[in-house]
Image (cartoon, rainbow, N blue to C red; front, top):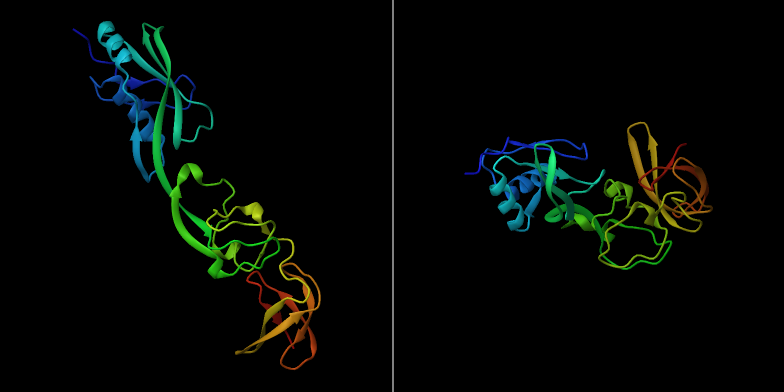
Length: 230
């Protein structure tokens, strides 16, 4: 009769260890290993049947399960693992097992197609949930880091925003219509203007005030509004 496992899943790659209940089958142990490392919002974790491992485990009666994953492995989508059975430290069976993890993550998505150099407005960005294995590593941190900037390349509708698709060097371009904001004590006056030159966040640029037709100077803020001081 097969004896119970020692209750520890050894990780050959040194990534860590995962505990398992006595008497757990190999498939359950592998699944526990994956679940422990999968994203918190994982929707499903599937491990294929490991019939040959189960048979070898029962025949041994005192084998341990060793699981090795690649360093930096993302536990989303197809997750390859090397699973081994060890008896008295000797390997009696070894194979690559592919687990599948379905998870979703919130992303920023382009609502329309845009050409390079297009000013990104709030209506151009929507919040959606997508399969996490399709989420880029360079996704912008928030809406404020997308809206008001310009595209560095052509973007197709429905694409998940990437950091490298956003031109952060030039915040305002020459002849672009901009919002003006004048602060004088507690008084705040908003207006509109046209940029006379290119500028980045923090730059002071010349602006034509469309109301007074006067040329003034203002500082470009991160939201694209040009702050004017008198």
